Image (cartoon, rainbow, N blue to C red; front, side, top):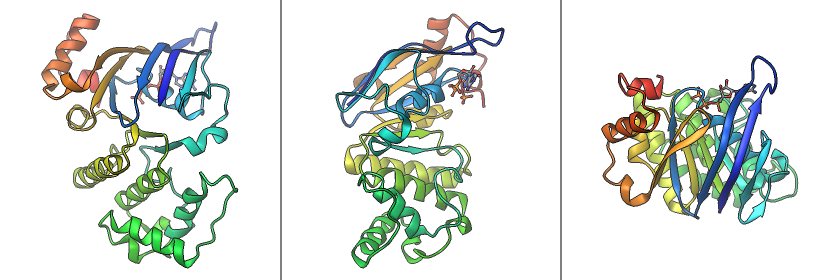
Length: 265
Ligand SMILES: Nc1ncnc2c1ncn2[C@@H]1O[C@H](COP(=O)(O)OP(=O)(O)OP(=O)(O)O)[C@@H](O)[C@H]1O
């Protein structure tokens, strides 16, 4: 479903600011795999997500989605394969458009017929039903401007928009980090629900180790542009934060003062 092979990316090569952001990344996800991604600041997590979405291209290596080599596809050419939610609730939606217009844009994304934001009765009913699953009463605010929604409501809408065309890959980039704890919990539960409903292949970056343990069937830890630990479904079931800290220390030989060192929060 998703295969990254030998992905390398260097920024500002041969200058004093040279930075190896990704160093030989290999990852193979099956349909329905839900991988949580942890690692310190600058580990390469966002760069890896950008390689998958096509926002950045690798210096070396290949990206395969649905067994197709998409390495050379620009972002727009693979956007129908990918759903993405960012940390900033303002990033995934258009504030001056209504809830249903935003949904219509997301809906038309995989229709390959350009942007169609018209909403007929049948489609409005589909949007209403989809919104009901969020339990936020947004189904009764279809014509409200999205800019008037709270951060949590916008993030829930972004999540719905990213998932309801059943993308091949769902990318979640610290999508609960900017929310207060109760809203973060709501979005975490929604994530679980939406991913499970359609068995979506998902990568979720988080700085919250407990969330990384609670969600998904696999986990990877990144550091200095490399995947330094991969936890398979069997091992993940019994994994604890202490295990992750020990693993980091064993692999990198660096003493962790606390999980904050790894998480950098
Ligand atoms: N466009 C860019 N130009 C130069 N350097 C970059 C660029 N994007 C990322 N980097 C560098 O590449 C490295 C990896 O960055 P990346 O944003 O992928 O890390 P991250 O694990 O997502 O970190 P964080 O948790 O802080 O978001 C960092 O050292 C970063 O400064």
